[in-house]
Length: 272
Image 1: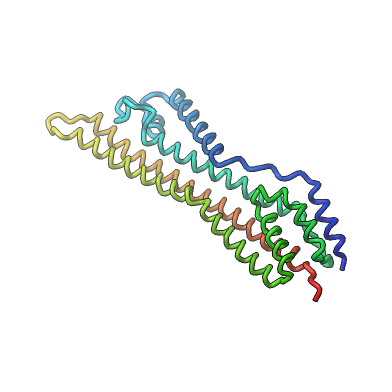
Image 2: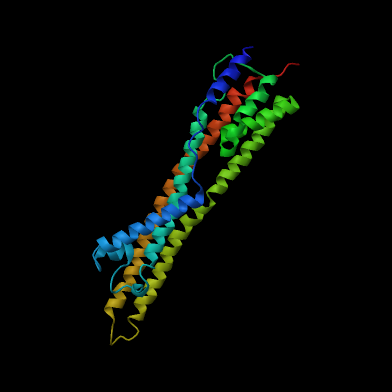
C-alpha cells in the first residue's frame, strides 16, 4: 500500500491558493439592478422621445399612460426584474466555476495504486478544513466521508453518509433556484398585467363614441402589446439561461460526488 503518496498529493494540492470567492447574492443583485437603471437612463437619453424603440422598450412617449411617473413604467419594471434574475444567475455560474476549480485542485490521489490508511485521514481532514467555508462540494463531501470513516471504521456507513449528504446538497441546490423560478414566472405575469392595464386605458378612449381619443387608444394598445412581447421574450431568455446554469451546477455536484467516491472512499484501507 502506497499510502504516503496519497498524503503527499493532498499536501501539495493545498499549497495552491483557494479559488476566487463568489460574491454574495445581495451584492450581485444590487450591482445588476444598478446597471439596469444606468442602461435605462442612457436609453432614455439616446432613444428619441416618442420614437418606436423608446415606446417599445421604455414606454417613453407623450401618449404614454405612465408619462406622469416616468421612468416608473411596466417595461422598466420588467427590465429591473430580469436584471436581478440575471445577476443571480451570474452568481450561480460563478459558483459552478468554483466547484469545478475544486475538482481540478487535486486534493486526492488519482493514480491506480495509492490507498489511504486511517492514520492519514486526520491530517487530510485538517488540510481541507480551511476550504470548508466555501461550502464547495468537494471539501464538504471529503470532510463528511473522512469524519465518518475515522469514527465508525465502516465503509458501508461512509457510503450511507455520503448518499445522505449528497441528497441534502442536491436539495439545497434546487432551493437556490426558487427565486429565479419565481422571477421567471413574475415577468410574464407583469406582462399580462400590462396587457390588462393597456386595454383598460384604451377603452377609456372610446367611452364617448362621438369624441374618440385616438392618442389614448393607441397608447393603451401600445402598452398592452409591447409589455406582453417584452415579458415573453425576457422570460424565455431567463428560463433558457437558468437551465444552462443549473445544468452546469448539477453536473459539477455529480462530478464532485464521483471524485470523492473514486479517489477517497474506494481508496480507504481499513484493516480487519
